[in-house]
Image (cartoon, rainbow, N blue to C red):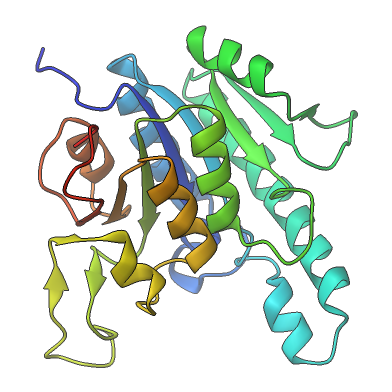
Length: 243
């Protein structure tokens, strides 16, 4: 079997991919597809932690744009990520992949609280750890949560899996001449490329965590990325010890 390049990963999933073609709610076919892609990684003994967005159900920032209190909207968005996490756990376990949901907001009836050492132990035992409810604080995005958890759990890479196959200089859906980047430095992201917020990029830079942005919906893409194949866009420093 070919050698795996990244043995422990933090997988950041966009909430919109859970909604399938409608990008809203939970689409059973989309859930099954995502679970199957994660199962491929577990077959290679990769340790996996997952952070999921909640945009398919509720996005706090959108609520605040309509006049809702920002903190209230963000808490609602965190609860949306818990719904997605429980749905993914169910889909994974129907595929025979054991998992644990841990939340930053305590809710003992449905999930464990996030405890770093416990999360590490679950991954070492082959369980997928799904990290819900963001950081537990308003004003922080799920991208920042992903970067924070990747650092806490000493992940080899942060894979941001969306519906777009990398980072472009402009929106490829709106511009036919959009140019895709194969590799970028963290500073380009921090200076305004709309990939993730600057806090998340800064955390990854400070902790030497490479970021790979790829299209989750292309079958086998995540698996190819962890094997070291050139997929999507790699964001890192030239002197990184992990690339």
